[in-house]
Structures are given as C-alpha cells and as structure tokens.
Length: 408
Figure 1: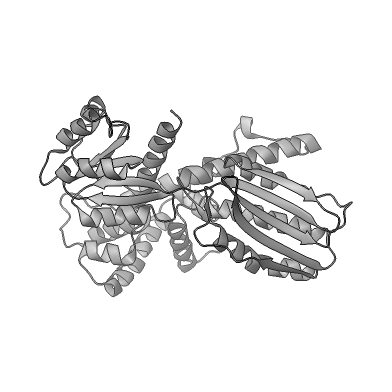
Figure 2: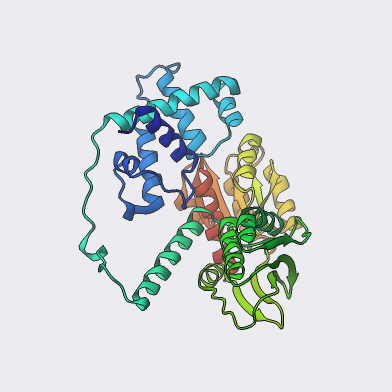
C-alpha cells in the first residue's frame, strides 16, 4: 500500500515536471486529480492548477496566514515557473525560509489530494476502443498518429523552443555510450560552435539523433559513429556517420522522419562504400527580437527568463517617448507594450506606432493590468494579454503573433 510520504514525493515530482509533456505521473495520482489518460498533459496541468486554486485564501483570510503563503508559493513556483529566489523576493522571505515553506506547501497540497475520494476508473469511450490485434498497417498508422499527437503537444507546451546542437550531440554521446559499447562502437561528437541552434525542441532533436545512433549500432560489429553539425544552404545540417558499415544493411528512419516533419525538417540516409550516413536538416534558429515597452524592470526580468532557450530575445525601453525611435532603429519582429507608462499613455504610443509607415508593420501585443482588449484591437494591436502573465501564455502569444505575421 502506498504510504503518504511516498504520495507527497509523487506530488512534488509532478509539480517539478508540470510542463513536461513526456512526464507520466502514477495512475493513483492521476485518479486523485480526477484526470484520465485520454486528457493528456493539458488536462493534467489544468487539474493541478485547479487543485492549487482550492488552497486560495478567502477575503477573510489574514494577510499573514500561512495558508495564503502556501497558495502564493505554489502558484508562483510551479504554475508561473518562478525560481526560488524570485518567489522568496515576492513573499518577502529568505530563500532558506522559502525552501522550508515550499516543503510544507507541497505537503498541504498532497494532504488535500490524499483526503479527497478517488475518482472512479472510467471505462474507455467506445470510440477509443481498439481491437486486441492489429494488422501491420493498422499498427503503423496507430503509431504514427500517436507520435504526431505527442509532437503536437510538445510544440504546444514549448512555443519557440530552440536546440543548441553542440549541447544535444554531447548529451547523445553520453547517453549512447552504453549502447555503443554493447556493439563495440565508439561515439564521438565533433567540436561545434555553441551558437549553432535549430528551431526544434531539444528533447525532440535528442530522440532523433539517439534513434539514428541506435539504428546504426544495430547494423555494426565494431567501429565508430561520428556526430557532426554545421550550417549548409541556410539550414542546420547534422550528420551521423557510421564506419565501417555493411552496404547491404537497411536502416529505417520512421521516427526521425516524423519528428523532422513536425519541425519543417528532412532526413536522408546515404550509403557509401564503407560507411552509412544519416543527414538531418532543420531550420536555423534566427533570433526574434521583441521590443518590450515597460518601465517595470522586475517584470521584464521575468520576461527574459520566460524566453530563455527560445528564439525570442528581449530589448527593453522604459519610456514611451523613447520607444518610437527605438522601434525604428531596432526594427523588432514584435512589440510588447504596457499602456501605463511614466511619460506617455500607451494608447497614444500604439496610435503613433500604427500611424508611422516604418513601425506600422510591426505587430504589437498589449500586455497590461488595464483590461481593454476591444480598444486594443480597434487601435491596431495584434493580441492582448492581461498582467500578470504566465510563461506559457506569453510564449504562446509571441509564437502565434510572430508565425501569423511571418506568413502574411
């Protein structure tokens, strides 16, 4: 029987991996949250937010009550993905004190879930039932559909993600060392510039390269696999080269093809006299400049954290009068505009940006505590966000507006 301490550890692990679409919590924890496997990562995230929301204080709750801090701590640390230091600063406590409070807050959330009745295990809907046996073609179609669903979820939960090629290939060498040793194959990654980045989630790229390494190892009896990365014809080119490799041995690339296709990439398998090469081509990750017009330095610090390891790069301007000139000089891909500025009304600035032929082509996202989405749209804004904005909401808005604007 599961002990409560083990359940607390499971809740902690779930919170830590809340936005990881590949993480699978235990069936018991899924039942405690009332989530079915069919609801996937999105349903799980929503259920966790609801559970944390149940700890929210009422109007009568004293400002110094621990329950109020527990709710705020969980919401900031895990829903908004703040660091311990940032959360401690927000709560006005030390980082050491926060770590103690964090343990207690997780314990309180786990206790709430532990005490409530478990949701019944519902039978799968009729339309989700599958036959006990599948033909080879049906199994392949089912696998392909599931793979595409997982990739779509990964993209949905990680908008704008980019992969550093050197970091990914170095990780593959470390992970694949045991597999290589089993086949008496040595793995090696060439020296690659850290600035070489591709538009793909690091986890997806890692799975591609690992799949290539595994397929090649299985056809070898000793030898070397060399991992290379470079730019070629405006794309990122990754080469996985195995030698010696039997010319007659077939190498399938089904998983690699699916992943590459999801990120507008391609996979090719080339056969040489004594070697086999798998080439992966992916779009180059070019920096996308976002001009943030906001005088709240702390908030912009969060925006920089939110956009770390994505293609989005933040440039800040604190005053509205300076912003118009900066927008003309920098020519950002996007503008994130607060309407409460110290020297100029944000609505006036939005009007000025739309009136200038140089800046009117730059899409503007309003991000403010002032909730006027209809006014923003009327004045030409491309999107509207209400502060405080969570990391995923900000990234999704940037990705939606940027991709829409880039294709028009």
